[in-house]
Structures are given as structure tokens and as C-alpha cells.
Image (spheres, rainbow over the protein chains, first blue to last red):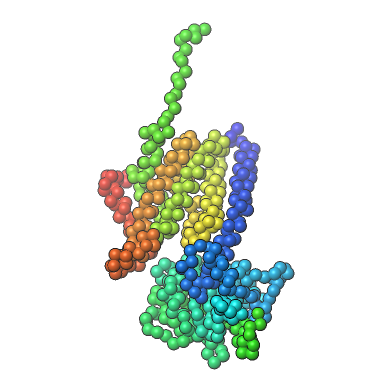
Length: 253
Length: 220
């Protein structure tokens, strides 16, 4: 009986329903906790681009600090604020998945901007954080770049990657490499030039638009360069608007 | 009818929970029949996740849980599973458990989930799991199968933890992210080879060498 086709089909069917049901239950049950973890992870990365948060121990502290010091806005390629997505739902900058968003056509993509506010004067923006996404050598790389209030000088960067080579390309996540970007400038005479990682690791300081390379990880470096160039150019319209606005009056947002 | 001549039914004495036979299920895979060093299974993950101790520990726990519970489930179903589709049934059970582990990690240990990433999913392809299901759980009782799974899981765990210990010590100069050499005031140069999977191959080879010399095990 255990060999008959009918039994095999019945067994497979029942098993599929039971296992599928168990997985669906688990997925639904764990969803809130997972969403919270992803949100925490995003906010940690954004905070990490502007300050050292290694002294914060619990997730609640991170979230509280984030809520206090950050506000966000979503802009389009022309630097105009976008409030609703294509379906008419309100857009929340923190909820935008930069990996999924990356595939959207550059011209119609939504660009989240996170604004780091002054500790005492919450109307003053002291840093802007821009998320970015690109390809490394093996798989995706992503990053958050924080610019000072002048929207030119880099305050800090926080890179992440999926599977760059440990000890080589994976060094982009280390404070050593990320520290090389601090103080660099992305504009020259009002034109975007971005910041480029050079080939080879000389250990010597570079000029305002270049950082020292990573020995043995030239292709990861190229990926980082392309990512910065790509996203900074998309944010240029916003940056220029913001600059001219701040020249005349306080922030419009 | 001469009922008197009928033998009295032999009352089987219940086997103690940890009888000698059962203890062997757990202790054998630790050394003499180690799934990694003797059966040479599960090498892929032994190379991939052993850069640091902490993710390795999570992986070891995950694999052990998956082996124990898949052994239990398959053993419970062993009289029901049609022989022709047994492999796919095993696969389905293992895949379900692995997905559960992965989802739980994502919900409660997101940092570990990010580090281990695809490797948790790849527990499905870990030959140790399917190997134990085919070789043991399909023909043995649930409790014995669980012990057998526990043995194999622990056998796998201590090997990958040993590999990770040396890789993290020499590759990152730390143990569980604690900077050992810096704490001792030594300036210890880290070895990039140990961070690469090649380092795991070398350490695994050395462990196998030492173990086989001690046990006198020879491949036939």
C-alpha cells in the first residue's frame, strides 16, 4: 500500500500542507520582530555615518537617539520633495529599501535624505546623510555618506557589503578605510567631482578628491567609486537647491 | 491445547535512558566516527563560516538543532514515508527546519543573520544532515535518532569551533572578538591566510592528521 501512486500523492500533499502551514505561521509570527530589526539596522547605519554609536547598548537607545536627532525627506532626481509613492501611499524615507530601490530607473527613483539635527537647535541641520547602493567585486555594496552642513565636506561614511573578500575588499567596512573619506570634498568650483579611491595603497595622504586605495582590492575600490559617483550625481540637484536655500534663509523643510 | 508448554511472553526490560548502546550514539561521532574529519562531510560550511568564533558558534547550534529535529521528525514518520519519495520528504523536512532557524535568527539575532547570510540556508545541503536521515533515522526509533543526531551535531560543532579558534586567533588576533594579544600587551601580526578559506583547509588537515595518528585510522 505504501508503494501505490495514490498513497505517494496523498502523503506528499498532506506533508506539503503541514510544512507549508508551519512556515507560513512562523513567517507571520516573526514578521513584527524582523521588521523592527531591519529598521534598527538601517537607523544604526545612518547614525554610524555621523557619529560613533558603539557606546549605545540597546536597540531602544539607538532608536531614541535617532528619533531625537534625525528627520528625513524623500526627494526626486530634481531635488523636489516627494510625499507619496506611485500608489499614493505616504513615503517614509527610512522604509525605502535601498537594494530594491537601486533597480528603479534613475530618473524616477525616490531618493531618501536623512538630516542630522543640532543637539540644541532642532531647526539647524548639521549633516546630511545620503544612502547609496552599487556593485562590488562579488556582490552588492552599499553605503551611507554624511556631508557636513556645507554640503561639500564629508563628515563620515559607513559602507556595507555582502561578500567582498575578507581581508581585502571587505576592509571597506573598517574604520581605517572609512576614516580616509572624512574631510574630503565632493565639489570643486560648484561642479561635482566626487571622491575617488586610487589604485594601490601608498599610505600617503591624497588631495581633497582622492583617498588612498586598498592593496589587493582595486575592483572593490572601483565599485565604491562608481557607487559614490552614481548616487552623488543623482543627489546633486537636491544639494544645489539646499545650498541656495540656505544662502537666503533657513531650511525650507 | 497444552497451554502450559507455551513460553511466557518475554517482558522486555525498558532500556535505561542513557544505556551503553545509546551513549555510543552520542560519543562515537565525537571522535572515532566524526562526520567532518572521518566521514569528511560538511566541509563546505566548515570552510565558509569559521573566520570568527561567534558566527561559528551560532552555526554549530543551528546545525545541531536541525540534525536533532529532522532526525526526530523523520524517525516519527518512518513507517509512513513511501520509499520512492523518501529523499524528497527528507529534503522537505530539513528545508522547513532550516528556514525556521533562518527566520528566527533574522528576528532575534539580526547581526548574526547578516554575517551567516546564505550559509544558514545552505545547512540544507550539509551532507551530515541528509546522511544521518538516510543512514539512521529511517530505521530507528525517535529517541535513538535524536541521540544520534545530537552526536553528529556535536561532532561537527567541536571541529568547526576548533578550526574557528585557530583562524580567529591567528587571522584576527582575537577570540570571540576579544583582542587576546593586545590584552597581553603583545604586538602580534595577523595572518591574512587564516582569514581566507585556505587557512581553514590547512587547520582542518592538521586536525585530521593529529586525530588519525592518535586513533590509528586508515582509509581503505
